[in-house]
Image 1: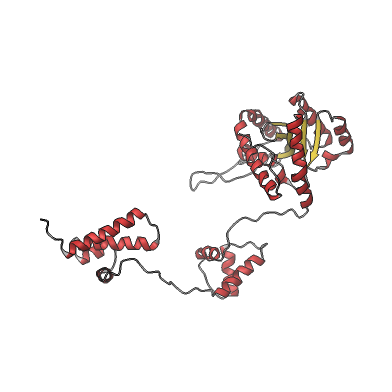
Image 2: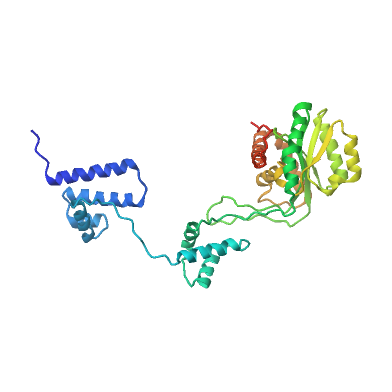
Length: 369
């Protein structure tokens, strides 16, 4: 026959049971963490350790530990009650006024330092800068980058492009076997561009800069869906004559294929004599122009960013010829990077899908796999 448990043993079993419940729950709330600390301290006490020893081990005062014991034995539980904390420095009305000021002056760059000055000047309240982000988040504000909005953008033209022009071009691709390309030009400076990079802590990233010695331009065409790319480099400014020469190179590269080229509204794309030449090439060439101020409808823009990130950032060249030689090596590697370019195209097609959804139009294209 088992001996009945003593009162101390029953209390110890009760504490251990509650502790296991919290441990299995894997609770992360502050109240649960505090309760687990108190449970561990009381388990140690009811196992026979001295009050002073337990208090020292768990870094609490003896008086505090006695209060925990009293609370537990009175069956009041050990969970810490929600504390009210300090009264807010700003009233509800002042908080809303602060939000209104920040919302109204969106062109102002609002950092913690600027908000600190605003609080001191308008409300005569002093906040530690490290607590200001928490205050602003509680008001429904978030820290994010501003974006340019192209004022001259024509929303009606963009809507027509998504709802009518692009589906019609896609129908040509599917029904008549044409190939659809996005065409654009980009320039690369010998001075290069600088970017963030992981380096040993405390060491500065020094890039040898030879100064600005001109630029090299790249005319490129990226096929929608497949990610096939063709590009030509030139050390001269791109004009209508060089653009026509590029189209002839592209035709020779694509053999007997019929090509639809989507271009921006650069003036040399629309030169009168060049438009007449387009008309003469109707058997294999169809040139379409995107709505003005709509770079988000141009998948090749993301390819330019990818090229600069992979091959141009944090590097400078002593001459225009050295830069051109570097870019020629890059272009030779692109046919071997089909998966990376497909990834670029996939991201752009996903962004374009959002535009189709915005205008309640079915998305006709297939994402590259």
